[in-house]
Length: 88
Length: 104
Length: 372
Image (tube, rainbow over all chains, first blue to last red; front, side, top):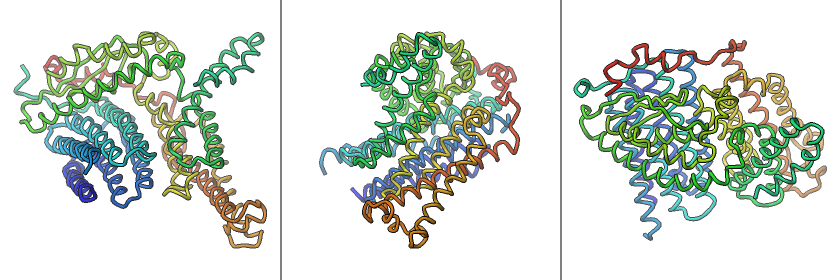
């Protein structure tokens, strides 16, 4: 099962690359924001998989929970900022 | 490999597939709103599937409940985030891409 | 389960009814919200904690009391808790259908992803809904976002502005099957007009985000307190827990506006908490020093607590974690407020003034796309 988890981790890292491309190329700031959000969601799963690999599930679950909260917070903050600014 | 592990592998593989569609969507789709379709939907379901698979693999214990708790959080938080950032874009006047061939 | 608790906590209020009817009515409501949120949060704590000895459960009860006191107006406000025993089972029957729809939607999207771009035909659909209850609207909006090819862009006066990726999915939405199902779930309250008068007067703008944040914040705070209290078992500790607590306050400020949040978490309060956190940390350290050990030498606290060295060490660490948590939370919050306000509060109508109608008329959407 461990090698399967490792493979899944690698696959997800690979899936981060398209998002990273979008985050670098843009073209607008808001495109970058959603790319970063998507990377955050993938990181969440990777963190839990790492917990299974290192056999410290409880610890990594706590970390990924915080990550989920901060990801949500970041998206809301960006949305709020753009809404107040009125332009992108 | 017992039944629970088989189901878990199936769930995680499905989750990975939806992560892949999301990633390809974010790469290929023409504008912000359509990209949002790709990330907002695929990622939510993919996280749900992956975490459920891992919970099944881990068996019935407190950590599995916490995994499901994260899944529930993402299930509510992700569409809300999608909506809020789309709304911001909409109010800032980001023009949606339209298909010139299909419009009458 | 909650009935028993509600009646016991209501007794003193019921006694006052004859003197101040209006006042006690409100207090009765508050007591009910308080006990309901306490029970929910305590269940959540038990789920998180995993340590079921008296010491941890006492901390848990204390934390839940604190959070349900500070945020009893967040979790259960406007829900009409009397109906919840009807709504929750129906919501549970709605969820499988909803999951099925989500899977359908993702398979549809997967097909679109691998097909040529010219197959897309994105456009906006204004969609007038029959629902009026806030919670039903939020459920519906999030359901739309998750199901086939549609995202809720805006919600204004019972009209959803939906971005549909294809004309087929827009037609699916307009049949209104999902709306009927949600209407069934929220049957007795689905059309209550309370939102028009009080509820949404304050929350009309950004209803979806506000509702979700309102429901999540108490749980996030409990989670932060859990991280602080279980610092010596898990990766957390005072610093991380404090940051999570601060994040919950930032979340409130993002959703409800700076002014409303700062009226609750005032500058005076944050400054006081900041210095008292440092005081707790330094006080425990200096106490160890006074008892003849090194700075933060917890074993020496046993001379004074008389509970045995391992227990004393554990208590000492907990005390320091609490101090650090309070200090970090207050400090992060005040840093956020200072940066966000740049020293002065924005003027009262800081909300966006552009309405969707204006945005629509400002040729945001080319005319020819509206009807696909």
